[in-house]
Image 1 (cartoon, one colour):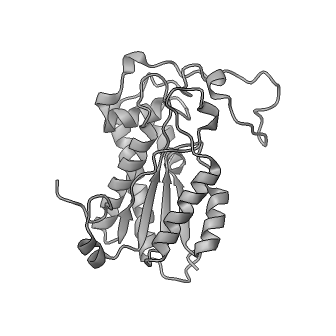
Image 2 (cartoon, helix red, strand yellow):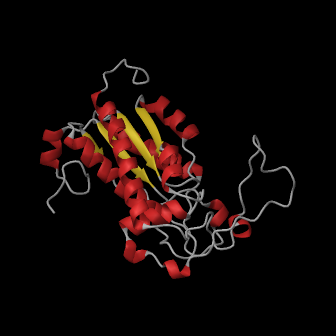
Length: 256
């Protein structure tokens, strides 16, 4: 496959000078256990594939988009007891996003999409700081929250980690890396302290104690076909956002 001008890892300086992208996409994942059957890099695989396919569609529609290399680590402080889990603290994420934004803005790329594939990554306070410092328009895109209608239509059991949806996606994207015969049922054990799960309250889950197989949601009904349909829905939705951002004129709220 020839180099794609909208993928930074593949293109070269001559092409970039002529192409002049105005929207950058930063895929951001995590490296952590995903039940007993999915690869540790599940979030990295998802973020990368979604970003590249959405950028392909947007590029074909005329958007000046550029996909940056994927950040492979996220906030996994409650999972550090699980072998080979790597966690970025919030201060680390702030430093990385700040330096990426500072670098891009100095080159005239002033629109940045953080395509997030890990529920433990919390970008809102970070983005508020970095956007103020750089003047960039920064958009956080949590792909797993984008199309609740598609989630409800395609998947039978709700989940939030390594369940039916994520397993279906990886069965579509990297089927050889899935060991379905090893999959646990993804049970979530309730908190013993009454009232801590009601709306308006939050505390981090001690992950291994709450999720014995590290999954949250039953993957048994997953399929590559469901994953392919969901992948298409999400990439089409993301591509429309990228096109709109690329075409935006300064002064159009929130691009001010």
